[in-house]
Length: 240
Image 1 (tube, one colour):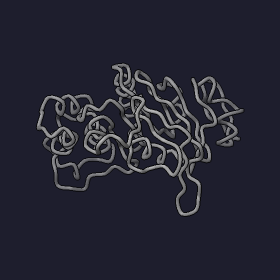
Image 2 (spheres, one colour):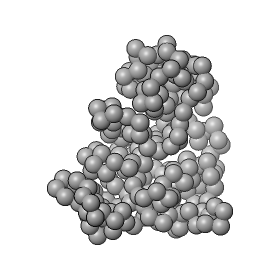
Image 3 (cartoon, one colour):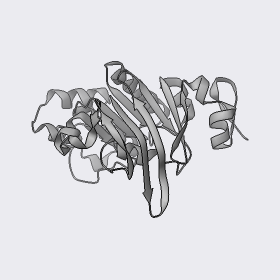
Image 4 (tube, helix red, strand yellow):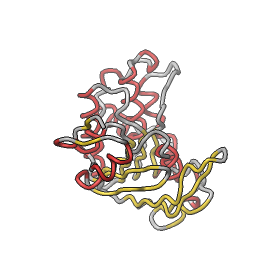
């Protein structure tokens, strides 16, 4: 449904993405992993149409993404920023309802479904700036879900979450993908990636160096070499 073909991008004289090639299909939860500075967040921004590449192209359903008007693109592609925060005096429900802006409606059903899916119904009337970091992160994920996008691009959706909440969010993302949507999530927790992702894409120096199931990517020759780590049983990370 969405693909990057030969995408290259430089910032401040530094090559951030280098001939990035990535195809994302409906029905898969894909984990994007890689060391700091590998280009993961930039890749999501390019796929979301927020940053144009210097070279190459992004396709949505076989057509150039830039052909979609911004509002039409926002209805189809939901994006969660790495540092998504809300410091405003808005309630959780009001923040989640922002996900409906591209649709130009005030539909309540998708907002309530998103609140329920993230376990936030009881906090819906609470000001978001009074929540814990993990609760606020779940509210920002709910905002993306409320927009009912076909493609979800999530930068570190498990960050700030305790283990139980992280597992719940990853299970939700897997169910969302199973509904026929595209879900791409940047993850730093390799155990979460191994447990929940249908497919793992390993990025290094702005290029894909491995793409496939955990058994193929979380190996000494792929992720081990890129991260400088070793793997034990069940993809447990060991000191190098």
